[in-house]
Length: 350
Image 1 (cartoon, rainbow, N blue to C red):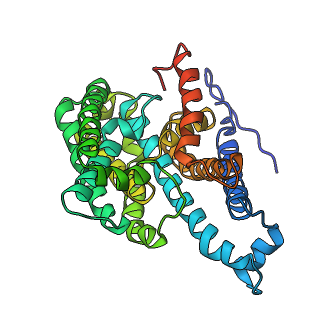
Image 2 (cartoon, helix red, strand yellow):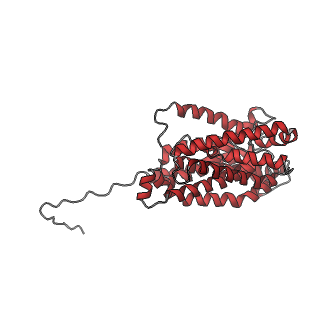
Image 3 (cartoon, helix red, strand yellow):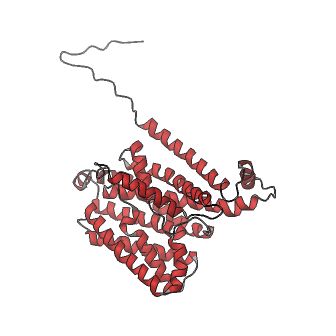
């Protein structure tokens, strides 16, 4: 039954709230991200030097029949695909945190010296301590990534760190550490032989046990990153606005760097340094999510592993039966995107 509401003189009715138009497309984007990731995973399982029909992929995963494809699917490509999903999600999520933290869409997790620190630590482990197993690399890579990230934050100013200072400090630390890596490799040829395979990021022939060892650290970094979504959103408005909203700028920066270190350090230890995933994905999905980290970070987590798996598949088929490492493919694609971004007039703003 309809009733008529009488208004007092001078009183007007408030307009009805406008329906939300942002959430349905964003939610739909997450669904699309899941579907694309499934397609990329199927391609990773089916495409390579040996093409495998999807029916045989399915039977190899869930009902092995003893065919010649079962071992390829279960022993070779499934671990490779799972590593690609975990590492891609970590790099994409770290990139989203990094770009929001520095308020710079050109920022990459390597800006904090994470990759350089991990590489320098692994070189030291090989040359000084004689570590030769990938499992041994894990803890050295994590320690090096953490030390480099702390050094960048200290040089950038623990109390007055700004995006520009962090970028300059990261550039300096990267240059120094990569100079150390190159010098040690030239001085010790045995280190060069062992390091050159790890130094090129790839999903090929990576030990699944290493992923299991790194998985708790990846999960911890992901949970910390998602927990920081709201404080990072306040920090993206500027330090003064973040303080006005009750957010601790220093704590948010320290915890963000911790999350980036856990994510990138673990991913680098598993697959070696893989560049540009953390640059490309956050910039690409921001057109749909906007700058809000509460949406940006889940998008990065879903779309980044799909990109890494597709890059890995491209590397398998371009020069088949040989392979091109995934890092070379992502670097080529990332270089093109970087040139495009630099040419944009408003590239400095999120």
